[in-house]
Length: 353
Image (tube, rainbow, N blue to C red):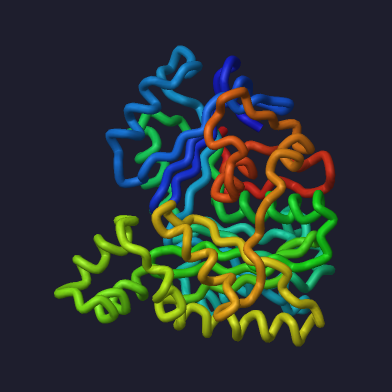
């Protein structure tokens, strides 16, 4: 899994708000996680300091790592193909332009099978459903440069969303779950929403509403003088916003209920639980608000983390904190794990040679 130093492995997940890092005893499973650390993505000095003091970097001075990133303009979209057109070279670019509203020449894009994350074989063109995954080349380059500045050498760079999707499908298989999971990556401007089952990614939809849309509501509700003051208070973790939670997520909720309603009518299945990732710890209460009786009315996913990690040949060293880790670490463990052994392929967007 890791292509870095012989003695240690590192894993780094860079989100909009938090950077989660893991130091491992070796580069391949079975392995032991020796350290877990959460750092604010905006605190570059803290990230530099951690890397500088990390053991096992090897002779290069860099922490060679598998890295997951979450570019704001990432594309992860399930799509139904017209099989008669799959072999037409103009067909996929047409989808990117017309359906996804992106400039394909500026993106790195892969077509994957939504069930196991393997590459879609357009030469055979026997399967109508495909998962298009991509990110702007400019953002890939910027992310690599930033990691190098921090002293992290990205041996492998993955779209973090895909690693998480692969991990959560694996988890649903491990738990032999029959109920679909709603996974939400609530970002600043956009919320990426997915409905997953043990068989793969069933639905994907980007919703143009995120944390930024909640700030004017906070300002209005609390009578604050400007949005900047509202934003500082919202992220500060010094005020209990749970009482106005439903008001804050009203717009997002409306869009989600539309997606869920469509899915439930199409499949006859009800969403079993909801899982919110990529939220800063100060806003973790948003997950409970989304799941609550006045909102989606489904339980939050509480992962049975340790048995799942054991099934993946991953152990935590004594004293590793948080222990047991909470759901916010699911993406990191999905990056660390190798799912080849039970049929779920790791979904990779870019690998350094």
